[in-house]
Every structure is written in structure tokens, then in C-alpha cells.
Amino acid sequence: MNGPPVPPVPPVPPAAEGTAPPAPRTPPAGRDVPPLHVHGLTVRFAGLTALDGVSLTVAPGTVHALIGPNGAGKSTCFNVLSGLCRPASGTVGLGGTDLTRLAPHRIAALGVARTFQNIVTTEGTVADNLAVGRHALSRAGFAAGALRLPHAVREQREHLEKVREIAELTGLGPHFDRPVALLPYGDRKRVELARALCLEPRVLLLDEPVAGMNAGERARTAEVVTEVRARLGLSVLLVEHDMGLVMRLADEVTVLDFGRLVAQGTPDEVRAHPEVLRAYLGTPSDREDSA
Image (tube, rainbow, N blue to C red):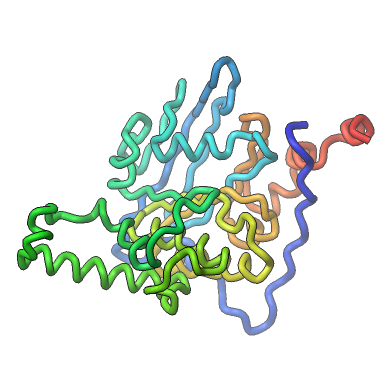
């Protein structure tokens, strides 16, 4: 077994009476969200196979979870999808566009945004950090901005309005002008999510968005992800070890173990799959050997 065993998947409590119906599984009308196709993805590092022929599809407007024990290949998959790693074989496509060997900035420009496991920066205010996410969408050049030309001023105003909108959507509105370094940990993590949303992505890659959070912070972030998917109509590919959150949010789940795809399906189908139980809990002989 690779790494310490992960606790068993907890049951998901039934929805309480009077709760709102689930968010729509399809993008709002007019929102162009193509499927994200991963086919036969293989990645090797110095003879080690990190991904072995992995395939999955993130359907438009859905939350798709990618789970597995430590070292299963989840972060490697995200690195390929965001252009930080080149596969030995296989393809990644967004609708009819091949992303497989594009540079990260070109993938981002096509509508794929990513967060990272660790907080990237605590410099500047919330507004400053979110504005960074708008950089790839800027059309006015540096000189036009410095000279305060009318079209550059108009664009800056539009960017600021969008940044405020995203801050409100993610619960960061009250902290808009506060330094990120002074925020609680959960809010700092949510700045990473908000910054990715400022790119106006069609597909959002969330790499362990609740890692290190307490129970209240995890619940708030889950609410934000649900609201973002419903309001913006984007697709979400989620890597997360919090199985309670995965089972609540995901429409589809893909399970990796040692770089191989071992199960795929709805949350209920996946958590009952024998290969998933083996990957997370080990066989009886595995547990006896480790005792």
C-alpha cells in the first residue's frame, strides 16, 4: 500500500426537509462549456509510471472528483491538464481543441483555470490577488494603461467590477481591501479559488481546496463550490481527500491507485466498488502485515 490508509468513506446524510434542490447539472443557457476529455494518459518519471493509460471525461456543468491514496497520480494528472507536465502518451481535449502539448498560459486562455494544494501567495490585498487572475483577459497594453487612455481606463473599470463580483460570490466581499496575510486560513485558501474564477474559466481544476481547514471552513468552501457551479455554469474537476465533501459535491468520481484507473461512476457506485475498498483500506492480509 502506498502511504497511510485513508479513513473509510462516511455515509452521506439524507437532505433535510425544506432544503433547496440540487444545482443544475448543465450550464446556464448561453454558457459555452465543452466537455474535458482525457484519453489514455501515461506519464513516466525516470522509469516510474505515475499515470498508466488514464481516461476520463468531465461533462459540461458537472463536478467530477478525482480521488485515490497518496501517490495515486492525482496531482500528476492535474499537472498535465494545466500544461505543467508533458505525457509520454495520451491526449487531453477541451471540446474539439487539443490541449495536450500547449503551454500553461495558452491552456488558461482557452478557459482552464487551476488552484494548487498550497497557498501560492499572501502578498497584497484580496483585490490585488484577484486582479492577477484578470491579467490574461486584458487587451489594453501596458503603455495604454500607464497613459490612462480611455479604452484602457474603461477596461480597468470592467476588470474591477468583475473582481468585486467574484469576491462577493466567494464570500470575500467584506475582506476586499484587507491584506491576505491578515485573513484566517480558510479565507486565504478561498482567495486562491476566487483568483482562478477571475479568469472566467469554463473548466476549474481544484487541487485539495479544503486541505488544512477546520470543519466550518470546509463546509463554507463546499457551499462556495456549489454556488459557483450553479451560478457560473462551469465544470469542476476536484482532487480532494475529504471523502464526505467529495460524496456531497461530485456527480461523477474517478479513482486512481498507483497511477491506474481502478473505478469510475457515481459516488454511490464508487464507494461500494471492491477495488476502491482495497485501495483505501487494504485487504485483510495487508492489514495483518502492517500490524
